[in-house]
Image 1 (cartoon, rainbow over the protein chains, first blue to last red):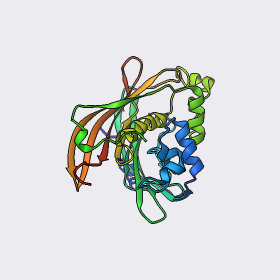
Image 2: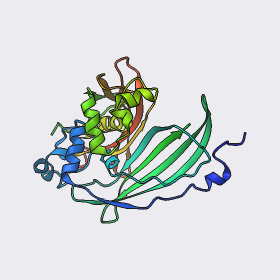
Image 3: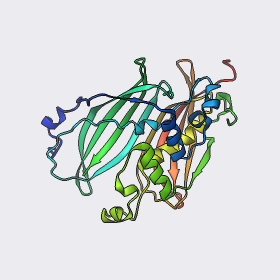
Image 4: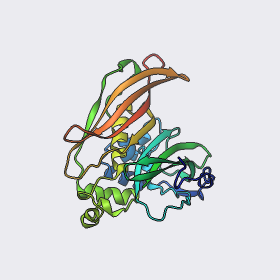
Amino acid sequence: MANKYVTDEARKQIGKVSEPRTYEVERGAIRRFAEAIEDPNPLFNSERDARKTRFGAMIAPPTFCRSMGAPIPNIKLDMPTFRGLDGGSDWEYFVPIRAGDRITVQSKLVDLREAAGRLGPMVFTVVETTYTNQFGEVCVIQRSTGIRY
Amino acid sequence: MAKQIYFEDVEVGAEVVPLEKNPTTQQLVRYAGASGDFYQIHYDKDFALGNGLPGVILHGALKNAFLGHLMTDFAGEHGWLRKLGVQYRGMDQPGARVVARGKVSKKYTEGGHHMVDCEIWLENAKGEKTTPGSATVILPSRAAS
């Protein structure tokens, strides 16, 4: 059966990237994020303790990247009204993000597909977001699935 | 810092020390501020009800953060959380306790690293897994020091 929304034309958008954005990682922002999720780990809360570790500085908790508002590539679909759901995320961590780092965030549409759901066709968008530090090292890659129905 | 776990200490099937969380509406507001996610279903009850929800609900990303907390505690200061995956299957509301849990599913050596895979999930008071997922950590080895 042919897709209603995710046509061959729509799928040509796979690979589309967003504008990059650069954020300075502030120590206070890391601590506020750790406090909000109630994670008392000294690596995320105490400069004094974190400096004594192999990291040499306070580091960001795994999902801190959420606060660096990744712009999402503008996806065009002939879907006049829809509701959106966050399906989930897959994260890969390569290099720690330290307080004081400047992180460049860029996202890319890596998949666009359609499936039949209970309420009609559902569209799945997979966006891959890359977080790169000021030395050009990829710190984190996040793949998030959005659902439109 | 908590006591460090080593690769040799881990057995397949072993439970990750569970992490209990008691999210409140205040925590949702703090998380909205800290993360920049200001979607009203997470702090405006009328808005949430108007959207067919039973009331305000936890941010999926906050539940993701709870599971991240579970795994960075497990990895310890000398370990490293290498992968974290979560799927949002069910809603959770503030005022209800949730428990982040995990179980070791595999241990192996790859590229000189000592790796441990875990099945992880967030469980509500009824014992339902509202947020299943998986994680991979690199642990220090007692041998390779």
